Length: 463
Image (cartoon, rainbow, N blue to C red; front, side, top):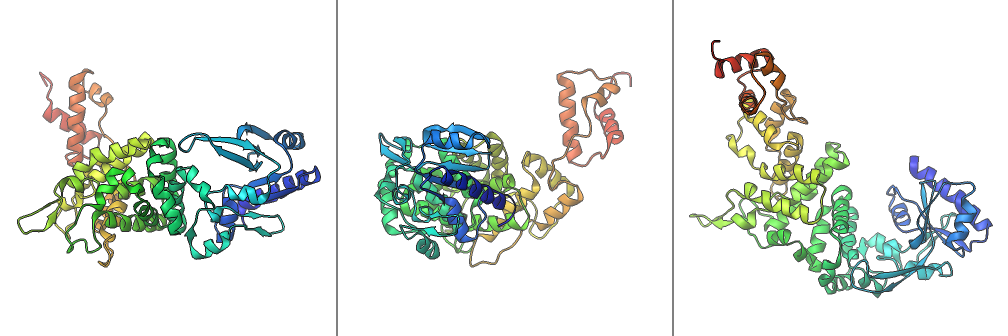
């Protein structure tokens, strides 16, 4: 173990020893930390479950020597030095519908078996003692080896958010779900409406940022019937494609393949978490306009004219409905709208600088580099057709213009026009817009040439 994880674990051991010396029956590492440890995956969160001590007792033991955050009192959680969480096992009783319909009662008298039984999946229902011994009452290790998500108990059905947790776990670890748990998920479909959209967004965020096989998450939604709760995605499943271009199948199948390719591109390009989030959501939504536009042409082939442009409104509504941050929506929408822009140039031709500058401006605030990743994922998500990058030439021109990551910046500003004697106001605003359009077309390259362009196109009386 390295870095932060190693220091967290050492600190957790130190705190656990303090609590055991003060009378705790047991202290165990629990939840995602244990799962990730057994998978050999680095875990950011370290949770220690403490048996036999109440909340106030734990705080009293630790507060003199550590920084103790008390905000989790109602859930029986104490954050220590902002490094680890100390949890008291808790009982949950169903008090209403949905994810929030629980009465929570921290109970230090619970046994480790009872505490594990309340967790969602068996792979998350394990504990690990500080000597490395694994407490595994529900065969979570076996399910880890098999790559199976299996509900720990029938109480799984008490919380509909667990279905979406299953979706992002499937994407992150490439797991499938056992049939009994799938049936439970199907029986919970109607409780989707009880989930807050903020929580829905959190699970999709994890799907995008952490998923190694995002297709697994999408296919789990389909298998459980929860895909229908995202109508824009469900319609992809009902939309056919020309098999000569898309031998893989319908639009949903293509999207799932393209999302897996997008992960590979993100890793190859060393995208950060924000870039990866935008890329995966753009690929997820890139063909969202096809259900509106797909028809058979005169040759009896499926075509989807203008689907990129028609998808803009749908993707915006889709992301806004799940409370995606506005900056995400602002970047994803133009990526979807422009993912067919390479067709403006004959196949094999290198685009002009003018075309690339204009594309970069239309993509703002997204970048040509992100756009190229969307286009490559789209083109490569069509097995068994070979993978390809149809916009390599576009990237080369963008690199020459220093526009892979940035958008064109206006050369002429208001102060330049004022220096020529023009007055600020609406007319100056129109002049600056026209000048920027001319700049994109390559009519001038610097301030001197730009000022001459203004003099030529907007001569002042008497000049």
